[in-house]
Amino acid sequence: MSANTIAVKNWGMANGKNVVLYDLHNKNGVSVSVTNFGASIQAINIPDRNGNVADIVLGYDDVEGYINDPYYTGAIVGRFANRINGGLVMIDDEQHQLTVKPGGFHHHGGAIGFNKKVWTARHFTQKDKTGVVLEYISPDGEEGFPGELTTTVTYTLNNQNQLIVDFEAKTTKTTLVNLTQHAYFNLSGQAGSSILEHELMMPLQGYLPVNQMQVPTGEVARVEGTPFDFREAKQIGERIGQENEQLILSAGYDHSWVIKEADSDKLLMAASVVEPLSGRILHVYTTEPAVHLYTGNFIENNSPGKNGAKYMHRSGFCLETQHYPDAPNHSEFPSTILKPGDTFISKTIFEFAIDTN
Image (cartoon, rainbow, N blue to C red; front, top):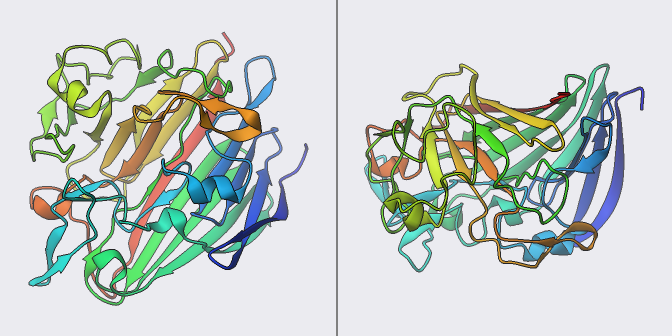
């Protein structure tokens, strides 16, 4: 394909609204499919070192798969990604009880988060890029959060083989915002295969240990001398089975690494992943202060996927760029407060490349 194009097709109904699938293509043969249900990435097709194109993310063939999905597959998570201990938060000197799970913590936006909403959408095509702009208006009080929150996510695929994810959010009352993109990657392009031999590098010095509820303790621990040290590239599975308290608590990697200790708009590298057999490479850059690595520890074997595939335990990994989990309970963490008149802005870039060696 020699030009940037977009194909739009109706994809069914959900919540009484039309669901649409947008197929973005660049001139290099890379394509990204996005649906307005959950603002989800449904597919990313990229070539390997031999020119063979394959889909490198987990997903479903139709909207019913996403309606029934328990794993936040490919979706936008909000209004607060990850966990808040207890779910009772103080905002502007008022207590607000958020929706909590049986363990007593708020998780990934609540009972019906942004991943289960039908977003409004419009698409665009420009000289060297194509994309989709999606918007969801979360009403005041939804899942316990104060303020009507208007969230916009823009997916842009350019000719540098970058998928750029831009977030903006505005609120009518002081509230909490922590948004993330929850794609599960498997760079082999072989659906259901293990991701443990992928080679991961994260140039990061610290991570956030968790307690038995997988909520951060408040400590920022050094990665040096631990299985959390990926400053030099290592296979994801090389140390995942070690007798390490943190790995045992989370059944593998399900932790946030610190990119920076304060908010800023500086774009920094969060991670780089190589799949050695295919040569596919993923670089992740973000303005967010943390990246959460999740290694698909709770994917049930033989979970249904695209094209008849069966997804297995640890057949996908997530690199969720976000603020620190449980930030409302730790004043020393970068703030997740958003006030009226301010705009939450965040950018993450997923950049794809090929190792030709």
